[in-house]
Image 1 (tube, one colour):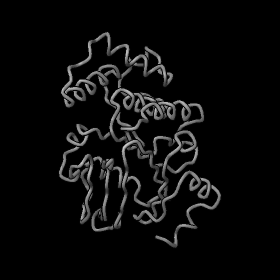
Image 2 (cartoon, helix red, strand yellow):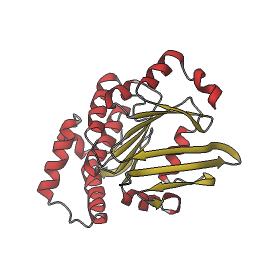
Image 3 (cartoon, one colour):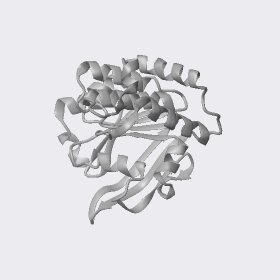
Image 4 (tube, one colour):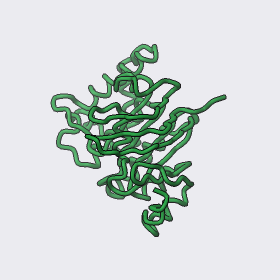
Amino acid sequence: MNNTLLKIKNLNVEIEGNKILRNLNLEINRGEVHAIMGPNGSGKSTLSNILAGNDGYNITSGSIEFCKKNLINLSPNERSNLGLFLAFQYPIEIPGVSIMNFLKTISECNRKTKGLEPLKPSDFLTLVKEKAKILGIEDDDLKRQFNVGFSGGEKKRNEALQLLILDPVLSVLDETDSGLDVDALNVVSEGINGIKSYENSLLVITHYKKMLEKIQPDKIHILINGKIVFTGGKEVADLIEKNGFEGFQDNA
């Protein structure tokens, strides 16, 4: 049985003629947690934007297969419908829309895509409160406008709540740990661990070791100058913390 969920092969990406990703290869199976680490400007956020389907990036060659479909040809909405979720470093604000109403809308869209009826209001409320409790989100917070006036930690908790509600097949977390204090990091990590399963996979893009200690990735990839130059286990994070990325530069 083929458990491959995401397969990126020889991906080359340019922005305004500048090469950002160079022959990048990455394969993630169902149930796996992968992490990508690398210095600033190595192409980490470009990769997450490409997976999201954001404009402004020119894929010159290579392929991306997700759920056995050609991801490059799919719109952002179609990618989401397949079960791809992306959490970015700087979550957006939506004035005038409460967190609860936003969660209700994305939940109904998600269930419709899967051919399911919307949850009964009482069942949905129970689900949200149950997941919010895991993240330390109070009932009154669910009435607040979506991310408006939120601290960085509150925004990241809000994204973790979306993850728990949607239960996506593949979650791409682009520096979700950026700007979090120790307490917030622990809570958000607990939420992320709450979606790990034999069917769901995670791709965590980060600079830091702390979150990786919490979520325990199966593989850690080092991205330098747009290429994955090394892949290893949990020990890779220790090597980076001790020696930085210089030891991997020769492979770039």
